[in-house]
Image (cartoon, rainbow, N blue to C red):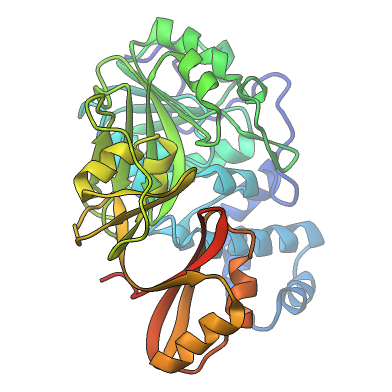
Length: 416
């Protein structure tokens, strides 16, 4: 039972609505969702050439603001394809897409909530999380920006959740909150730049205490770059989530949902959009401290979520590995151990970094750099790749780091 009552399909304006993102405001979004807007989008999709030539052609048949809005949406849809399986049917605002975790994380996170539970999505943006919740139970979604709310309502329909997701344009801080669970995803950008101070979020992170008092089960999405002190002050169980090799977000869990551990890392499996599951690593106070050793037969690169969660000792215990260098998140071991929490590379050669020496080694074995990785070294990967061009057939991964205070090159086979 939700506290806020409104008819499905209605989108009332809140008082003092903030300005929507440029080039795709609420009026333009509403137009593109009409039949005339759909025809304009179809025409725009069929155009060829660069962005400027397509936009010029579109302006011959539509007002400039409608032509610009159509081209903006098509560009956003193209960028969203890696995040959403139905991106080409969806609506986005630029800021909404930038802050969206995407369908994979949304589906996985929604599965941590009880099936059929009523959920409040308090800052729904373009609705990526709302539609995932709506596929599991009744969901009430709110956003202070009308353009975002229009996108969220449309996107829920695209995924077949239009009957279970109700959307309103409203300020989450002015709602009377009542539900079985809630999700809070405050805006973490202002005028296009990322905010480092959580109290500058909209609404500020401290608002979660009001939500928590009204709704016992709560998940709050925040930037994984927030400092540990801020996360600890928030009082929840913190979990860092990575997908496709990137630490995408941190989640603060409260109540009876989410992991039981105070600190954990979740690594999503696979690359598809169905049956999203994750492997979870939790803090273990009994693991031995890390020690620093010279490079051994295998080099391991821990997952970014594992690193951010300060779980290197835990993954080192799994790998029977030690630290390659102080303050550098590379591990080394005598053996190969498969784990979702780190990527292993068989070490072929190691040497103090010298461009000519590394290039000579690559030529000797017929090597070709397929990737350059760096931690603790000043040389940029793009610069090293450019300086070490080779034409061999054997793929090689170059790892740049510091060992004993000196820049080092570790040359490895690619993983698996």
